[in-house]
Image 1 (tube, rainbow, N blue to C red):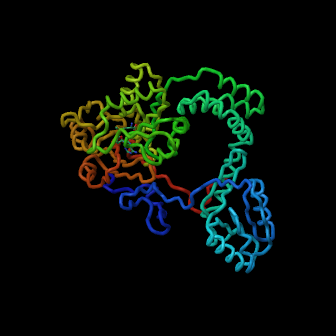
Image 2 (image 1 turned 30 degrees about the horizontal axis):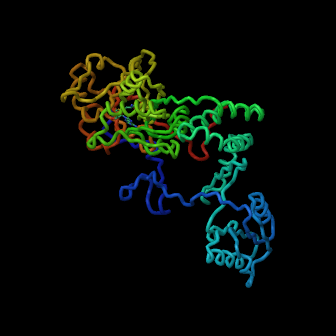
Image 3 (image 1 turned 60 degrees about the vertical axis):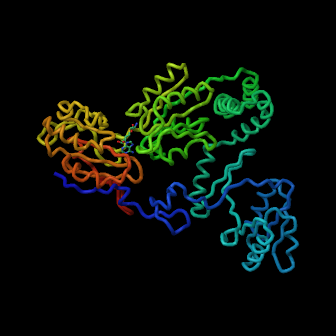
Length: 495
Ligand SMILES: C[S@@+](CC[C@H](N)C(=O)[O-])C[C@H]1O[C@@H](n2cnc3c(N)ncnc32)[C@H](O)[C@@H]1O
């Protein structure tokens, strides 16, 4: 039987220190004076600068300087150019809103940078980051929409690849759609002064029929549809989406969850929802946390129900984000019942529940077909159970659970001794493989493999306090560690 070995996850083994905050100071996963690693410092603050009718200076002769001058003219700047920047040229900077230098001798570019910075004029010297007070991003121009991508100089090639992807996702019709929205902006403001309602109506139009017509190239029909929306009676009903946020990794959200988070006015979330997931929500959405750590107590369930009902009745578009899946030990059923009873529209969006995320992350199959030969028995059932103690006891039917199949126990760390006692007393083989998986599905997932006895003996000391799931059953012993191809490894196999 496996010994009690704290098995490092694949990610843990591969994890190289990643630096954040001030470069070179703090390894990823560390916590600095309570500052979460998610709060990485943004190296440059993006802004869009209005240059219409303003003087800008481009120094240099060559292709780069010409390209920059062209881009600045397209943005409405009054571009002054000069091939060189020598002593006595300081007057060129008078009234300048922006300065760019390229393709000129180094000492002149240094002098240009110093002179501009002394006057507080933003300056960029092409390919010389140390002389820049700002950097220029890769831009996707869908006027009046502009999308800018920058890696802060860390990976310009990656930024360009991303730009190409975004360009494909945002065809030029989006520019015409933005122009259409701009034409009707004031009329919508007049007709629908209430911000949340106006936003919802416009979201439906610009994310729905109006956009479809524009993308199909029928601009006139898109315009007519926009007028119809403007004159029509807005739908004032609110809706609450009970959304599964999965185990915590943002890329384990469903596409539907991600879309709804981008549209919601309000996000109501519990403590299992990670910052990575919350970062996917619309920036200006109201965020309400209704769950704190175990010792700190969450909002009582009936108050959460009442809150969701109230927000729905106010006409808000609410995403109620719950860790994992809302209907697996998430009290989503109670929230759905309260909304239904109050006549508030709701929809349930499933999420990746902890058992699936932990199993996948640890390479533990939950079922096994088996061929009937000795040592290859089938595992045909999966039971999701709660380890929550009721009056100090674990209220599970151990007789059924000990008969085989895989058992996934949520909230089971505290009740592990009771689980072990119950299962062994009901006849479970004491050598049955078991595992504890902490923060399953996240980059910092950890696993502890062993028998139930071994997990009871070492589980508490091993735990670092993250959400933990227990898995028990013959299939757990079939753990297959994922291995990634090594550089240069031939993966083509026999031909
Ligand atoms: C109240 S239940 C919520 C379960 C959630 N609705 C789901 O479907 O995963 C909380 C328990 O789920 C388990 N859990 C949730 N996320 C987990 C994760 N990422 N890794 C391990 N266990 C997790 C832990 O046992 C935790 O105590």
